[in-house]
Length: 552
Ligand code: SPV
Ligand code: MG
Image 1 (cartoon, rainbow, N blue to C red):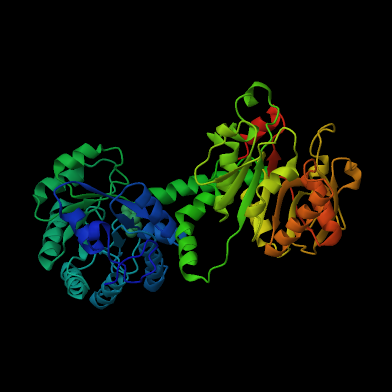
Image 2 (cartoon, rainbow, N blue to C red):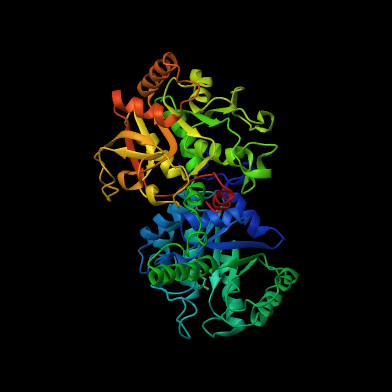
């Protein structure tokens, strides 16, 4: 069988941990004298959560897999639909999966095909129960009819004869206690199934205490490993099962049940508030979803398999000190702590998350305090008497291909940077369409005049072009506030260097700021304005710093 890839690209996934096949890994869990635990999953994502929690195996529950599809645990999903769900789980985790095979979906013949298909898709074992197709969940009703013992033994033999790997595990589930047929019948059935070749016995009970399970265990006397599902007798301490010699405990449905509570609560809040404000922060971040489903692996694969596209570099202007009182005596503003790392560290993290890995920082004030791993430092030693353009000129050599240029005292959410990087414009500016009214007047803001204000429709991609950026524009005349962030293509980088050369010749290089540079560029070349709404901050005051600490 093929090797499993980290995200299960292979259908024939078989490798678990330490080179052991998943079949062997499940067999070891079931057969070992140590107690083992299997945790319920019902789809690929929940299977990943089981693995991350440290479990050594997954229970692919019939109840929760069907419930997650909005169906009853009554074989309403066809067995091939179930098989597809199981395949997502097998692809999502390296753990061995024990499949709840219900009755085996029919007679011995259906069991043969089912077991073969499970093995082919990397599912390590199956549990079949001695009921009749279509099954009903064990916790519904009383006295459910059971299969004829001999007929069920035929299903077990047929399953064992059809396994594609010698270590495939087939567990026979005894429903006699559930159906009220008593201990003797349960033991008689368990023995018959054991003789028929079952690798282990699942003895099920719906009592609220473990008494009948423990009585069965004592009478059984370790003839074959025992598996239990303590959903109803949940209060029994696990030490009791350990002491009794139970092989495996299945926590059968608790991920689905906990997700239900969380989903209901979130839906109710959003419905009530008509807003996401209260739930953001309570729910997993989108980044966390990306992490769980393995986007990092895809990025790596893209680097390996897609034609190479030179990636953007960045220049961060962080030479000025920033006046935040005692906080900026021994370090510049960009090195102040924001959620456990310097502001500059947060900024560089956002750049890297968007694939911008080559970062040059222009430092000046208290430059010895500006340190960050994996970042190139360029010094503006005349920071006290020069302006932004001089700092940019210090990094001129870094502005060759596609380049993101940003102030070092801003924070923005990643979608803003991604928007700039996706833009096909040669020069693209991030502009906050709400920015003109963002702060009380008195704070200097880089306001923007463009040929088109924001239309109010984020799907409208008619380009807007810069006319002017300055701090002396009346808010009413402006289209928004520049966020201190722009991107140039390789062509735009050429325009930018040309403009710097022209300004140098006019003696403007030392004192000019970036708004003047961009305004002049816009007079000669198209400089596109990309509108966003909020989700960024520049840190000028202690209040801004406090707010930055909240910009999750
Ligand atoms: C399942 O998880 O689907 C099971 C266990 O079969 S039980 O719901 O207890 O029957
Ligand atoms: Mg079930």
